[in-house]
Length: 257
Image (cartoon, rainbow, N blue to C red):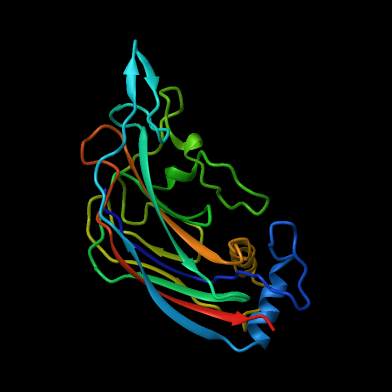
């Protein structure tokens, strides 16, 4: 399944000291703190790239006496039409010490990106996009409605209700942010994540902006932002495939005083 993602959205991450309280995990107490810091401090930008090597085929499980034996990474054996296996690939962006993220752009340098079968993208464990949208329908949600990636909830042991079709119209996808563009199954296209901060918006009256601020304020790990590509498979040798490539990023941060 071939996928392209073009996402445009706000990113709010926090790891700061002044006038901001943190829980034991280092997360901000509220999105208002991030807004204040990214509004009042000087925004800096740094650039780099992430290299995702191409990959093809799943690490399949087996069947012994008619029963599934999971692979080393928790995949089932092959069954046509079910989400039985997945491979996932993570690259991390190290953040400057004391940084608070105010904006992120990640874009594939190659305009033709390919996935097979279904695919998803998560940042620090929070699902940002998936095609088809049914990839997230079995996942747990946090208190703000964000889907939390967990393969053990997605994989089909043969007893789960059938997921929606993996093939559909060009707009058949899940998108956690304000703008996503994905092609139809097995079509070529670019890949971009665009998270542009606009703190001039009236957050008090814009429910969508508030929701996004809550989502992205949870992404901060203080020292890195991890991006994971997920490719699934049902039964084919070419499943769990992605074409890889170089993903250029532009990170906008403010530094804690």
